[in-house]
Structure formats: structure tokens, C-alpha cells
Length: 539
Image (cartoon, one colour):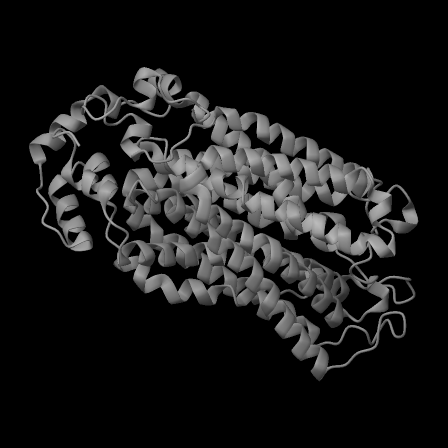
């Protein structure tokens, strides 16, 4: 390393893997555990909400379902809040510091998870309105966790294993999805045993016991527990040295904080910090021509790929229950009571999470610093495209009873390659390639683009997947293009994601300052943007 670079940054880049790395992964990761639990647990209870609050005609052949607008709101309002939170807290994390904002997001998640389960109202519309209100602010807190957790982990990590550490934080999302299914299984099994009700076909009135109203409330409130357990440790974390040194310009405090973390003596290097801050590469703003020249294509790459990925990822995740029902893996609702339907939906989601979603995340953790971000993202989008078309084109074949298991396996593989692919890398890369003073903001913008895609996926799939046959359509919905054509569209979206991946640079093995251009002139390697040597795809 050249003598012009800051010692504290060199120490972080070359540090051996230590306890504080794993502590940071756990503290930041539990936030993501809660994020995923809260966002995806709603898909487990929407059918139950429809039975409890919207079964108005007991002579109808099927139990009640949430009306289209209500279902869209309940499913999508947290995503709208998440988008807003990503932009706001991403910007605030660069202005006030990562640590100061980090606790606020967790408090919002804890309070709103509990409040969601306590939603009240004299009418079904009142209950749904209250639930949507608290889920919006829950999403707002979740949104802040995206840029802050990614940025904190990237700025603490060494450059050799940085990708694996950031991916490990994000991989806790898989455990959150899995746990939401397990909690729903346990709660629904307990209630089904205690209140054994007949199916809707046998007794429309008796198929939904009054106590079923407790089930969805318990499931959504459980999400507050893991977040609450890590709040103290999140508050004890020091500010990242990169923010303190490069943004706050406090070299002395950065050296003191990292000396405690790394257990080594650190010099303040205040004169060197002043020279570092005077560089033109460390002064341009987000809306400057210089940022556009250096990072404009990179920001386009991170926003577009995350946007396209989340259209497909959230469509598949939030509506897998509808897809499994359509192919017959989950029995028709009229053949079950309300509590047993929750159990069957949870079982399906849990199996997919256990055998496809969670392994995909940890494959990324294992290989991201070996084969790189670019390769994993390209391969992931490629196989998501392949499997989506393989499901869609012969869709009628998969709906036959003997072929259902094959459908489920191939459908699960789309989740595996989403997570051993772009769902992980789109989170990792924006935390590595932008300057420290804009890192949280740019990650928030990239993540917000993803949530815009998720909103399109959540609202669009709900309507698009409706069949043209009125007898097979959910009550109140207009005719859509059907699941087959919707899956074809999602396959095309995945292919576009593959193409836009070529705008995203490879950060494997490079320091954050090399990738962002903040070390120009330090003498240990030209930056990616400074000499144009950083190819979008790895050489």
C-alpha cells in the first residue's frame, strides 16, 4: 500500500476475519430477518383475512376473498412504505451518519409490527385501513434498513471477503421467509387442533371459527421479536470509520473507533485526511456532471437490474399460494376450513423456502468472492429466464395431477437462482461502487427502484394472473391474461435483467476507494473511473 492512503482504511481492507465481522453480520442481519418476515408473512394470511372479513354470502360456492382493491392495498402498501424509506433513510444515512439513523429504523419496525397485529375497527374496512396504515410505516422502517445495513457491512468488511459478508447480511432474509412459514405452521396447527372445524363445503358458517382472528395477529406480531432482541447491540455499534474519516472528516475519532474494534494502535493522520478531502474526486455531488461521468452508467445498471429482478421476485413470492392453488398443489379453498388453509399455504411456502430460497442465498455467500458478482448475476438471470419459460410454455402440461411435483420443483429452482443470483448481488454491488459520501443515498436509490418493481409485481400480478374464464376468476376481479401468459411476461423481464447486468462493474477483490475513485493519486492502482480500466464485465 502506498503511504498516501489512510492507515485506518488500509487496516480495514487487510484485516483478518474477526469476531466483530460476525457480530456485525448478526446485528445487521437480524434487521433483514425481520424485514423479510414482515414483508412476506402477509402472503400467508390474505386468504384467512378474506374468509374472516369478507365471507358475506354463505350460499356462495367458495369462501370470501379480499376484494381486489383491498387485496392490492394489504399486499402492496408495505412495499410503498419501503420505497419511501429507502430514499429517505438512504439520504439521511449520508447526512447524519449510519449509526444515528440505524436505531430509528429498528424502532419503527418493532412498533409497527406489534401495531399491525392490533389493528382495530368496527367494520372490515376499518380493520383493513388500520392494518394498511401500520404496514406502510412498517415498510418505511424496513426501507431504511436496506441502504444502512449494506453500507455499514461494506464499510466494516475487508476487501477479500467483503462480498460474502454483505451477502450474509442479506441471506438472513431467507431465514425470515422460512421462519414466517414455520410460525404460521405452528400457530395454525395449534388452532386447528384446538378448534376442529368442518370444511367450507360442509358448513360455510362453521368453517371459520371466531378464534381464527387471533391467528393472523399472532403471525404478524411475531416479527417484532428478533428486531427487539438486537436493538441494544445495534445501539452499541460505533460509527463506521469510512464515514467518520471520509464524510465527517474526523480522522482522530475514526482512528479511536477502529483501534477498539481491531485491537491495534492507530494514528489519527489528520494532515493526510485534509489532503484526502481536498481532492476533486472527493467533492462532487450526486446531481453533478462529474458524478454522471463517473457513476451514471453504474447507477443505471444497479437501478435497472434491481427494478427488473423485483418485478419477478415479488410476483413469485407474494403470489406463490395462488400459483400452487392453480396447479392443484394446494387444495381448493372450499374443501378446507379457514385454519387448515393457512396451514397448507404455510407448508407450501416453507418447503420452497427450505429447499430453494435459503440454499440459494448461502450459495451466493460461498461463491461471491470466488467467481464474482457479475458472473453470479448473469447466471442467475439466465436460469430464472430458462425456468420461467419452461414453466410457462407447457403450462397446461404442468396442471395435470401427475406433473404437479415437477412444476413445484422447477418453480422452486427459479427461487434458487434468484437468490444464488440477482436477488443477492443487486443488494451487494451498490454498497461497493459509489463514494462514501453518496454510498447510502445511491444504495437507497437502487433499492427504491427495486421496490418500484416489486410494487408493479405485487399489483400487476394480482390482476394479470386472473383467468379469462369467469367461473375460475376470484370474485370482483376483471379478466386478466392468465397465469401462463403472466409467467411468459416474467420470463421476458428476467431476460432484460440479464442484458442490463452488463452495465454493472465487478468489485471482487478491490477496495471501496478503488471502486469509487476516492483514492485517485494514492499510487496503488488507478481507479476504475479515473483511467477507464474498470470493465463492466470482468476480464
